[in-house]
Image (cartoon, rainbow, N blue to C red; front, side, top):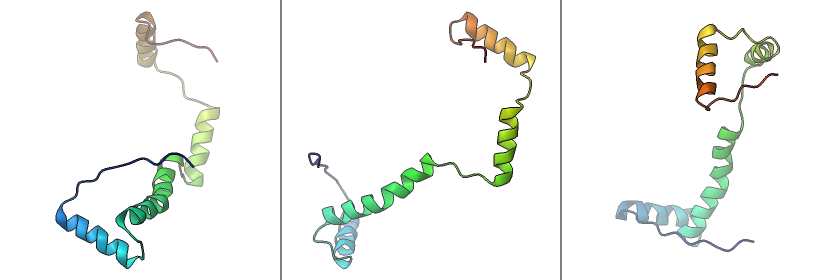
Length: 95
């Protein structure tokens, strides 16, 4: 197990009392144990929202079709890419 880290939290009185009451009601010895439980329970759910992309079957099929048959690049976008390449911002690649 990694070395424990120390955090200092400054709460208003109402929040501190609420946290202490909730920790006690949930059967935790202290606020630290309660917060640790909350973080371990909630953090994976929150992080999974940013790690997963859920799409409908219809949207997935549309995405795959666009990947397999991409639209032509318009002249305005080509001009911007050429301008960026001249400025060293864009590296042109051929697929």
